Every structure is written in C-alpha cells, then in structure tokens.
Image (tube, rainbow, N blue to C red; front, side):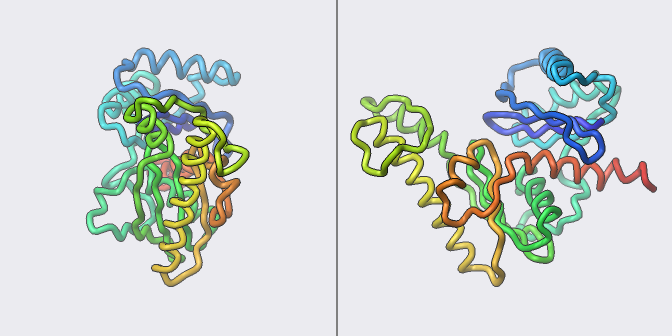
Length: 260
C-alpha cells in the first residue's frame, strides 16, 4: 500500500491506497512541534482502526507547505519504511508543464490538485482549494498549469474578526438562514459565508473572462461542500482531490519503475 500525506498549515490529510483504491483516509491537526515518534504512533493507531497494518505500507509520498515538518516526516518514512519518503517538489515528475514565471514558487499542493483534476476531467479547469488560504488554479485544455490567485481562507477571516474586534465573539462557521442577520452571530455568519461566496464567484468569473476557453470549476478542501452548495460558479466538489493527485504523481515517479 501507498501512504499519501498532504500537509497544510492547519490540517494534514493522510490516505492509504491499495493500487488505485483509497482504503481509508484521516484528517489531523498540523502541529509542527509534534515529534516523529508521535506521528508514528498516530499512524499505527489510525491504520489499526481501519483494520490495516503499518507492515502493509510499502511506500510514502508527501506534499507539504509547512517546511519545518519535512524533516519530521522524512524521519517518519525512515522509521516506517527504512527509507525516506518521496516529497513533491522541484525535480519531481508531474507530467504537467508549469507556466509560472518561477515554477519553484508554486505550492506543492496546488500542483498536486491540478494534476488530479486534469487527469479526472481532461479539460480546461479552475480548481478552488479551500484551505488555510483559498487558492484558485487554472489548468489549460492541454494540461498546462497556467497560474492562479491566492487569498486568505475563510477560517483566517473568521479568526481575524474575533481577535481584532473586541465585541465580536467566535462563531461556528455555518450557513445562516438569511443574509440580513437579526443578531450578532447570524450577522457574522452571513458576512463570512455570503461574503466569501461573492469573493469566490467574483474571482472565478474574472478568470473566465481572461482565458480563451470555458473551464470546469472544481472545489476541494474541507470547506468546499459549504461554499459549493451556494456558489453559482462551482460545478463539482472533490474533497480528496489532493490525495488522488499524490497517488498519480507517485505512479509517475517511483511507481513507474514497477511497470518498466
């Protein structure tokens, strides 16, 4: 089996693949100070809870936007497999041309999402990933990564209101019944959810006007279902797109040796 690990600033998602089949997946809080030993214990527990064994893990691929965790997860791979895991980064084979001015600047998670989305739909796309930051990535009909946009994630906006406005409470992120809130909590939820919908749809529509093809719009990330339900531009939701992209990139690199 392949253990795929996507490390974001807030959460990391792990998935166990048996060939193309995702056997199970887990979402953990990202903690940069958690030592490799603790991650190993967690992985053993998670696999055991899914009736899987760490002995079944044959390889590991990691995408991370948190540099301090690269060494930690490298040690996890060494302890789990006896060798370092594969990290998505410069020099890895993705099968996708990167048209960024400096390809090394593109976050690994954005490329992984783009690879998975193009493999699934085989058309021009806009991928919206709702993470700590919300990213918008454009893929051409020829499978080229064209670039995109980055803005603060909805959770960052929610935390900013709580920390910088003395009288505003921390609220649960959920869709309110109406736009015109009748109390402070409902008003904040309205601003966060509907305000973010306006941001997402506005950026997607501007991107559509700037490119010369009609893209499919795909949402991924933990908050994708909440926003996509109300969005007028998002057409598909693929919450585990990044894990699927990691599997594909693995197969295009180390995995290809098994079929050569």
